[in-house]
Length: 307
Ligand SMILES: Cc1cc2nc3c(=O)[nH]c(=O)nc-3n(C[C@H](O)[C@H](O)[C@H](O)COP(=O)(O)O)c2cc1C
Image 1 (cartoon, rainbow, N blue to C red):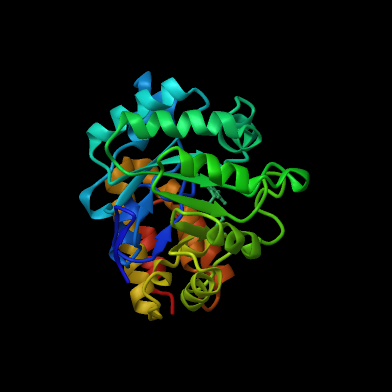
Image 2 (image 1 turned 120 degrees about the horizontal axis):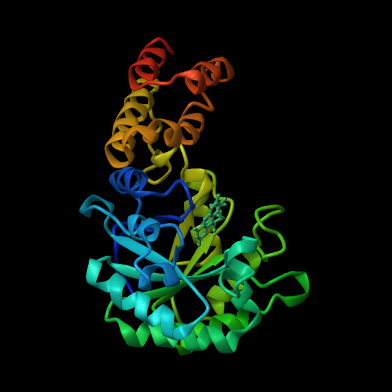
């Protein structure tokens, strides 16, 4: 199922979640090609965008092959977020997503990301300011609250709803849970049942059928898959790849990394490589060999010898 979700044109209902350090331009292209209904950049600093910081600008690069694509921004100042959103709109993504869930101390410490969950008034200001600044659809990605004692998700969702966003993405954990414990899909369903906007559920999906079942049981219009999509873009189509198909995608991904990052693409690719090979025969021996390989040719010849 694809089509419009409250004005957001999706290519399918299983979407790629943002994972900092992984869902970069090469991986987004791969995910889109394998059927991801939307791809999302990692969180990008609104301050960095308005200051034209060089590292930040690099994170904003994308190719048409990643579409439909959301650029995710974070920050705590409504004015800076609006300014960043205008700059981002010029680049031509399909959606702007606002991060209201990052648990990292560096982000929360400055009052951004999940720290904003403690302050629905600021959320209202930020989302309204971004919506007013652009004509692109705006979404917001939240967690259930700061901790077990403040699961104020209905207040947060109301603030987002009132501010003109087109959809809410819900990772079913609190900030205090980080990535531990289990995502609370009952709470996601509760949000879905009480929210006038489309709800995109997220958390712990590790297979294609599971994604469809989660969508069905929660009533969510779409679901987002993060960790379960790393090394497994086939999760979007439900296809079971052969060993040869996995090897050939690893090689292609490696070349895309070298093309995008230059020489340091080899090192940056390692974390993807271990995900791709995790279910192969002799995975641990293979992993050792691949992690020690220093060149593209070495990696290719190790892969060609695998089975
Ligand atoms: C290493 C890592 C980096 C992440 N980076 C981001 C990010 O940049 N923006 C964001 O909204 N969520 C980020 N997330 C959260 C994921 O998008 C997702 O909400 C979470 O991992 C739960 O979904 P999953 O179980 O399908 O991975 C990150 C998660 C991990 C593990």
